[in-house]
Image (cartoon, rainbow, N blue to C red; front, side):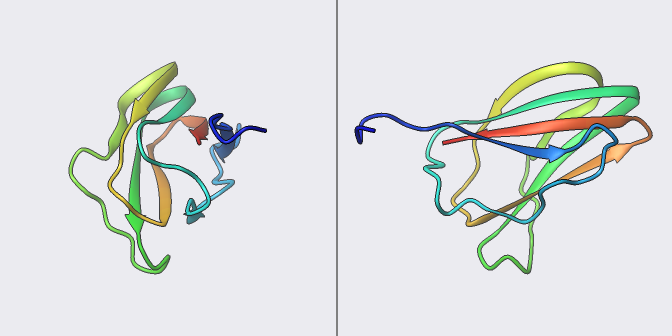
Length: 105
């Protein structure tokens, strides 16, 4: 593949039961300059999805505006940008169930 093409990797974050599939993701092998995307499917009740980041993979920090989805139900696809970090961790809050996938290049 030529260098001028970007491969998009899709990583499942939460499975259909809302369980975390991938957490403390090492994203150092990806070009995270620009937008990332999150596709989600929330059912049953409102949920919030947010993320925190880390350079060392041990201590994670939430920055301002890291709620990607706030008190929502249904399906959606959003984009977001993050500051430079090696690791990203996603959390979900609420009483519904969520499945979600991260798009990264």
